[in-house]
Length: 486
Image 1: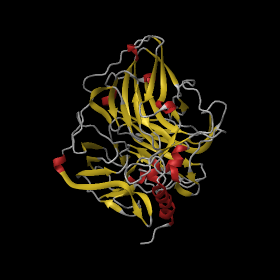
Image 2 (image 1 turned 90 degrees about the vertical axis):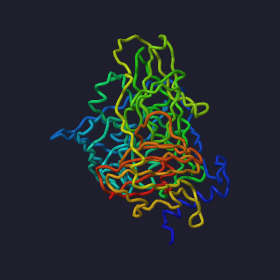
Image 3 (image 1 turned 120 degrees about the horizontal axis):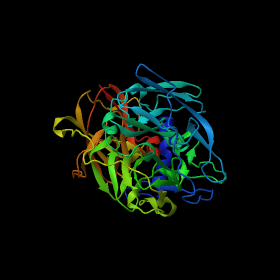
Image 4 (image 1 turned 45 degrees about the horizontal axis):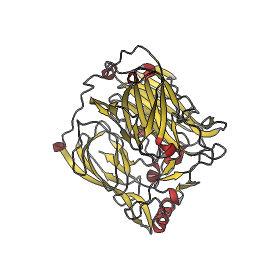
């Protein structure tokens, strides 16, 4: 079979990287690793900007138990670096986009209006969504057009996020700003005495690099999919942004705060730590069964974690840094909290948070294997699933509605793997069962040369979905597989 033009354009660069043995390649067959893109603009001083909190979107209307929103994608200017203006692509003209707060079981309709010069696709990451609204990468919204996405939200309260999902161009379009937070709330969670209101904070973390004029740098190939050879393993920015601000600071009271951490980076993984205990209460799929006290939290691209930090443990005037232990220098910093006042705090973290059903792997109707790796194809090397590049017309699996299945995921280098439609539970990592009770996830990080088994149940919707690497450069260069629930 002859390669398509898209395959040739995508794969030729990867073959050159493997042949050249560029710096940053993995020890596994010279496979390229993520590379740092250096800014031409001076890096801003850390902790000089207050943390911005994205605006909460308001429905344009609510009727018959349905909330209607509009998101207009448009070019805008943002104040990211001091003294410079940065062009962005933003939902509502902001970066990140507005936070949508919705209720479990209440239908939410988002009308996406494309005022950009390129096609786009909207994906609710972590949403349990019918296929026509899931953001299949070829379901394009053309420039000047609009589309309604229907989210029934028959799912638990959780920290989700939304972003562009256009085939071949997710990386550059998310990099330019097409991302925002989406919080699902429910009565179970609201009955708990967890921090709320201004002490319930969405923190969308990403990295970017900037030109001398403030423009976001990205090593794309223009009209062709993919990135320049040195960045085939993924693009790392040298400026860490939280809610669109570089290394910001938040003034906090001596009280508990709920931090909703979302890794919205293209390729960077974070190991987040404050130097003290954090109480992890939730993950991709909502609340854990019980809280876990941790010293650090690792988040691969696409993953989320909800933590409670008790700032009453610190004296007034203390500065508490949220650091990235996986980064060096400026990339080892994320943001800072300044403890500056006393306030009443009636919040608490109960010993029991929720009931989390444990899926029974003994009920699995099918076991499937998905290998995420690079390989030769048509004379080049590409990011492949089961040795093949993404073809939206080819279904790699056809699970039956209602069935439980076990999927075995293996990697060459690190790949954060995201499953659309249903959340899953991790059964084993390199043959070992994970510690602690089960939790619901939609993204799992495969580390280098690792095997992870997951179990999931396909519910509610028939149709086509995708499984893919959430390193966005890998995703754009064909590391995706389509499946159809029948």
